Image (cartoon, rainbow, N blue to C red; front, side, top):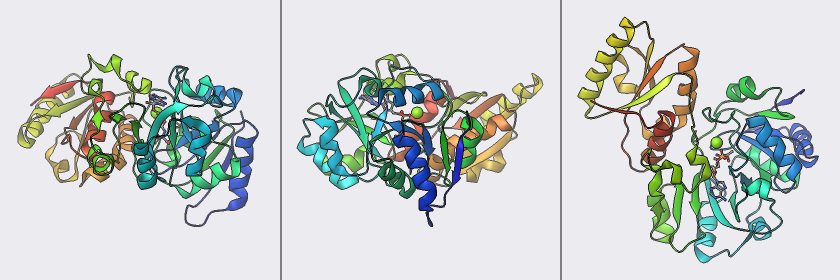
Length: 346
Ligand code: TXA
Ligand code: MG
């Protein structure tokens, strides 16, 4: 397939290019575009045939539902029923932004989009290019992360270009994502709201606005993961070709454990890579890549560095463990999935 590529600068948007890509979407075609979280692979959410093209391009199981992206808050009322007070408060406080809400769907949303469920996931992104594209398309846009199913989500223009050119009708190359991890997914269909996927809007942020919020307990352990309420959290995910492990313990113990393992790997002819805080970069014997100084930086660099490890022909990746609080919950959720829940105690 010939992919129409548009390069767009978020600070100086070329409306003609946006219109060209928006038109593809309105004709039932697929277009990849940047958002503030990760790049999304979009198609008309209300057109089953268009949505099927998303599943094909990603190689995604068809029981894994898609997020519907909207331009105006009011569009929620066209797509969902039973919009309660908590939903309204979340929409007012956090939209446009990196949070997706799950509500009971109206019949206008095809089961192809909702993965056969009676609920629908909705998000109003804040990224200027994403917003303009949805506006030009004139329809709500279903958009999962724009990676081949199982791979790390794309956060930079070159990720989508290298992986998806030729697989979709259009690609908008628009710089780096701001957050680097996918949106928080919040189920608002029962009495106590539940986070089905942690993101940069945290449990603490939400509790200030809507009171008690739970986190899906099945996210923490491999044995429970099959029961995850967001179908997407059940699948292998965020996997580079390298085998990933998380090393946990106190900082000095982590460093010496990883250095011991590196010597062992080298003797077997295996290349070792380490993902760590910048301040620890020089303490490792292996190829170490700094994820950042703060948790926000770690979140924004994680998927890029997982891809970077493959480019460096790394066989085994060790990641330092991060505190499971605030944004750290989203980081540890993605790292655990990427490592297939393999943790080494230092
Ligand atoms: O940041 C994001 O959310 C990005 C950008 C492009 O907006 N999109 C994204 O979509 O991450 P995707 O498809 O990769 O992840 C959607 C997650 C999956 O885990 C899916 O199972 C879950 O949301 N989900 C969607 N609809 C659902 C529903 N009705 N009930 C439960 N989980 C749902
Ligand atoms: Mg995804």
